[in-house]
Amino acid sequence: MLAAGPFDRVWVVNRSGRLVACASVRNDPCPEHAPPSIFQRGSSPLEALQRLIHPEGIVASAPVLREGELVGAFYLDYSHDEVVGDARRLAWGVALVAGFWIAVGLGLASYFLMRIARPLEQVVEAAERLGEETGVQLPVPPDRELADLVKAVNRMSLRLEERRQENERLITSLEERVEQKTREVLRADRLATLGGIAAGFAHELGNSLNVIRGFNAVALRELPADHVNRPDLEAVKREVVRSAGLLERFLVFARARPGKAQVQTVEPVLAEVVEVLGPAAKAASVAVEMRYAPDAPEVRVDPELLRQAFMNLGLNAIQAMQPEGGGALRFQGRREDGDLVLQVQDDGPGID
Image (cartoon, rainbow, N blue to C red; front, side, top):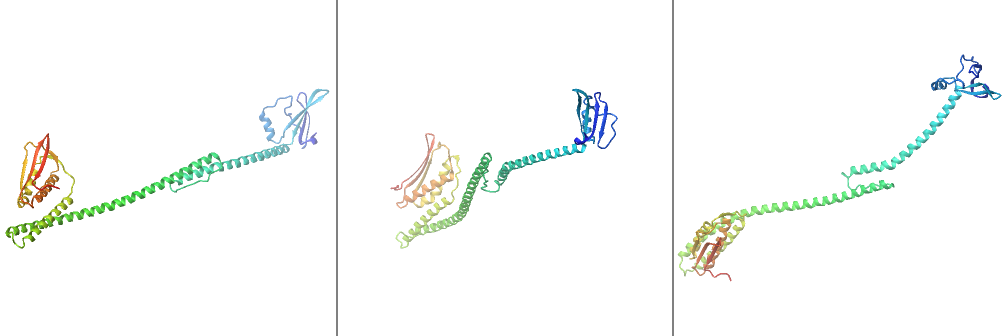
């Protein structure tokens, strides 16, 4: 029986579970107590595990029948090394199979991760580079979902590039316009400075012309009407008057300023104009009259601009009446339907 298989010991028990005979490869004596038999329930599953771990081997049993009647049983203790070797080979086989499938699973997982994770990493890197680089374009992967995502990122990159170019064009245009406006402002400032200087020169020239006109008027009064130099003095007077008019118009332009309107009566303005025009009117034998109604209303005017306007009208009227001599220049102010009416009349030839 021991030579029939990888057995260490053999026991034979009777029907009552008593040990009848035993044999061992190592010629060990029979144990005092027989192991649990098919007629006796084992102590616990832990006992079976201990027999597997310890070198007692694995115990198998088989009934002994005589004429169909159960008379006992055989107990076969398998060799511990043989059983453990088989278990180890089985374990190694299972481990190899499990390792193979684990490796296959890891390979497939790595492949799919490369197919999915790498394009996603490229998308993230491209999104980070969009703030620094221009025209970032990614290769389109074969996977449809990832391809849609990458195409969307590429379209966004193109739109950002177009917006960046448009902003650069706008910035360039604005810089050019700012530069042009700066040049214009500087030029206007230089012109304003030159205008102030020219206005000062014109004022001084006007003073000189007034002195010349005064001495010329004295010379004309002293010379008789048939004096040979009288035509020359008349020409000097005529040119002095024309030059003074030109200078006056230039000064009006050079001293242009924003209006400062205020509510007041116009009578003081007209009185000042009449007073200023007095010497010129007297020299031209023109009588200057002013009539201003006491009930004339106050109006909102700029006194400086209004004074200049009446001064120009008066000078033009005096110059128009000067060749024939005589005549009158009349300034009037009256109320009419609650409004102020200002009227300037002269006896000149009028305008053709």
